[in-house]
Image (cartoon, rainbow, N blue to C red; front, side, top):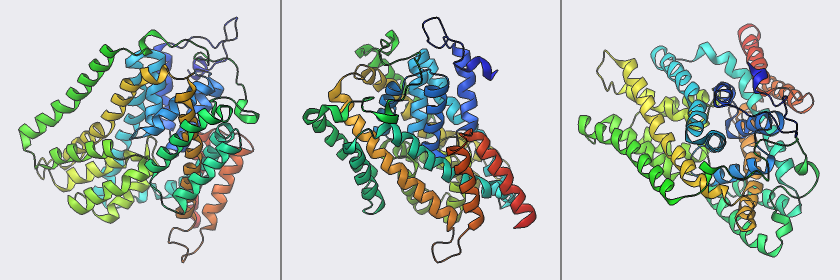
Length: 454
């Protein structure tokens, strides 16, 4: 079936063949199962598949959409999938793309969370985790290289990336502040030195051509993606209702102080008030879920992060684990329905966490589409992309530290994990191996090592 999704069939003018809704559906379903590596890895997979291989969207249009998603609160990779799905196949295309990005992870995490909380350990997958974590480190490094090689087209953008890295790594500057400063630099820089901030301009690797795309640089914005006040009001009203109805039913049925109602409210705030991806959200979730509400223990939160890191889907899917454990431990449906309680809580938490992301894309997408050739809008977003390269590099170091020195620098160095990471990096950089093949191979190697040697 995958052969029908590639861009090998071209029309006489060099464009890839048109992609039907159901062809796209199959791709987004596949992506939901292979989207490992956190946001950096997931964006790298989408770039490789959608820009380079299938040529559904051009490099410039891809980066323009990505820059918008970087500015929003919430999981940027899932929002990017929603944006591209919406641009290609209208509202339902966006809902399908964004939904399938999350659903496989939801079901997998409900199952793994049940194994964890019911049996007290995750030994069944410990070996797989041992191999996957070094692979994820290599994937994030590759993502920083891939995005950086295309986004950092001149010394000014390199400088923005370097300052961004120092700010978040050494000075612990909040991610929203880094984004805001990059946007300001891009806004004024676009006026003072416009050639330095042109999206898709520059030279070298950043200008590499993958052939004409279905949605190319000069492709007119489709009618459904044009801005109209009536569309904006309609999307806003539907989004409010999709939040208000379940929250109202929970409040009416269980009361405001009930665990499920408080979960809905808390994770709505987490979705709206936290910027900078999953690692920016986690301290807020930890403080509320562990410290304030007592839905789970600190150790359970750390184990949940491990599960979230090594399953497909956005890293913020760790909230699904938090919801499951909280619903299970609090026995919200009584002692005889613990699994049901956990599954319902996990689903509710996922709904309230991701609903704003869909609304943001469907609300703002038409406006963003009208600005992709307007320098005063693209220059700030180009600067943000450069800053994000520095942030991704910091994320790679974060992964590397926790994988290679799991007990801190005072503990022993994990040389086996280092060798796995090195092998994964060689496969990705030297042999251009498929990300999912690398993850599967490292998972199997980790399982064999943990089972028979370590």
